Length: 312
Image (tube, rainbow, N blue to C red; front, side, top):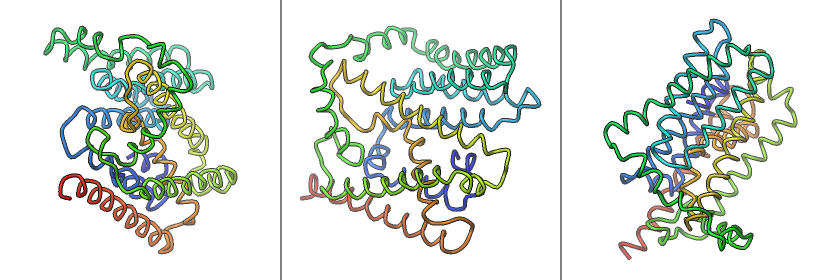
């Protein structure tokens, strides 16, 4: 949905973005059982998509913008009660409000109305949850991440030591991160994403031509807004991840998944730069082949990892 909103004329990009996410072995495994991770990932993706809708909302009539902020507030409201790593949408909304006011897209009064709409919607889900579980606030305040920073965790050695397990479990390390996938698999996925991100650099460097491919001149500035929105989402979820791991040792890649729609969008767009413009068979064949490769990697990781652990 985010890809269709941001790049409506780039054929194959929405399907490729969906495949890049859905066929990560860890993502597939994680959504095969019931935890709050699935809801957190949905809430984070909805939060990012609704904020993107604010960027693409018409400035007139005013009701269209307010409706977009109402949806953004409802999505952010869900993140508050699900998982801390989905809270990245909260500062994102603040930055977007300030940016639209600073650039004159919204007046001070309109910005105040947008903020009031977002805050009112933000309160809805916590209030409903509080009615169901009167001790909800106490549970939240007594969660492990509220215990304070551990001095022995606030070191560069500790933070650097999080990287290997986080990287491995982002791509595929099942159970309580004790069932690994074959060693080459993370490297293959690293390579696929690196090529896509290289395409982003290539496309942004040729920004004039890249924006021509959007085919709607008024969407040109929005290209840069959506880029910075996604970069900020990655930055904020990384800060939340580090903050969590300063209080509790949990170096798991799944904590990045609530914001993973942001990099996935750009990896897919980067690949679209390499595959060429237009709607020709060349692009379509490239998308199909890449999706097929991702499906193969996904099945390889799931079958090899789970097979060796439970059937071997």
